[in-house]
Image (cartoon, rainbow, N blue to C red; front, side, top):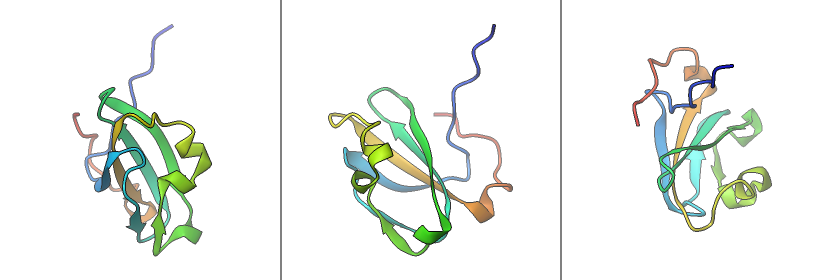
Length: 96
């Protein structure tokens, strides 16, 4: 049995926040996918989505229990955002 490749941040993803947990809040233009990169572990910590109801709204990861519970409060994070409209047109993943 082979191990699947690690999840990577898509090359067209936009950095929307970075810093210690919880990283600063940020705005999204539409629903999409968030890729949360753990700088301490040098890997994706979590991939989650924001719905279309979150469009044009400020997103605070500390207010999202599924995200807050999955992250280490002693680590530094980078949050990348891919809007739904761009998800099918992104180039290959970023090399981290």
